[in-house]
Picture 1 (tube, rainbow, N blue to C red):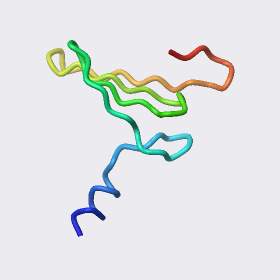
Picture 2: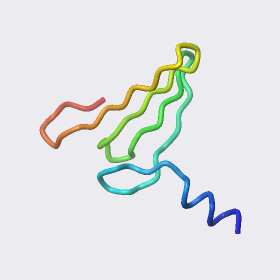
Picture 3: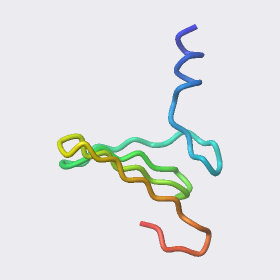
Length: 61
């Protein structure tokens, strides 16, 4: 049952609906789409969350 709740509330890419890959950097937490459609950076010390939505013709990291 708890696996079902995790699946419902797991962060997903708004474009392809794949689960986001989490990475922790020294300054922030990063969640990004494995295909590069979406990136979310959370700066908890500042209380800021930055999201990037990439178009098909934009440069990605």
